[in-house]
Image (cartoon, rainbow over all chains, first blue to last red; front, top):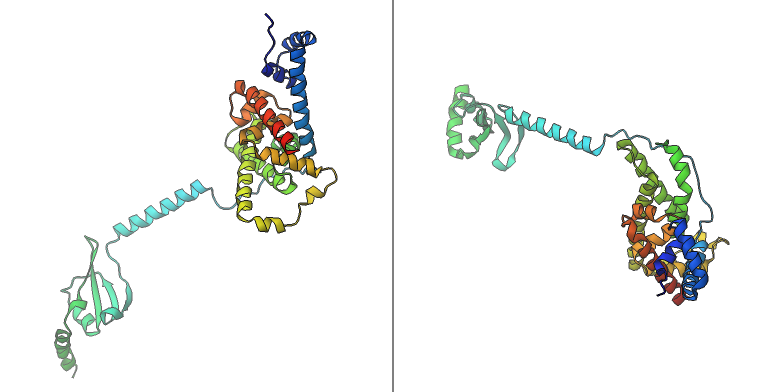
Length: 172
Length: 161
């Protein structure tokens, strides 16, 4: 029974992949086998066709320059930047949580008050009278709970006038 | 491990030639090769690369294929714009046989990505083992896949011409 090498073996031989001894043995077989000669011819023609087309696709010039390492950027790497941002956020959060109270001033036009104050005191404080006369809304920040409570905006307008009246007469 | 400059000198030209076959143009090929080397440079700062040649070819191949994919999508969107664009300077080069190149590119475009890459690597005279390292295909399968790719490419070229 005639045993011819497979087409793949011939292809591998042409690609230079098989061991030298195997290639020589197959070359001897080729001398006596017209079928295998046909196979090898076909494979060679196929490769030559592809090779010819690939040869046309050569770069006209090969640019070449010395390697210059990239300049290190001033900014830290992304991981470090994230860590930095996270740390800053945690610090700010800790600062905000542990802060007993806050005092701020702002526009309170929507509440019909001249100013809007966050003040670290109790609503019953004497100072509230004065704040009230000046039409200043007071928001009390309770240190423990860290919650804000606005006191004066809910006062009725009449009550406000009554309260301010004695202050005026006292001045006369 | 060699210095980076030595690696660059050793592999630049062959890698450029290899990538040029994907684009058929100088500018994108240079960009892809530079990007591959830049990635290697960064990778070496983290940890040493075992087979730098295979690593470079793999990275460059992936970059080239993804860029080509983007280009093709873009060209599908703007066929009229593409038609009105000036011809590439490289095709005017007398060394390039425009018709042969066009036939090859047409044939290659009908092949799968894997077939294309294997044929390109074969042109670079890489061994089956090296091709396997670049593509991630099993070394024992490279021969068969390459033979099939060759057959398909030849058939496409014959049909086109």
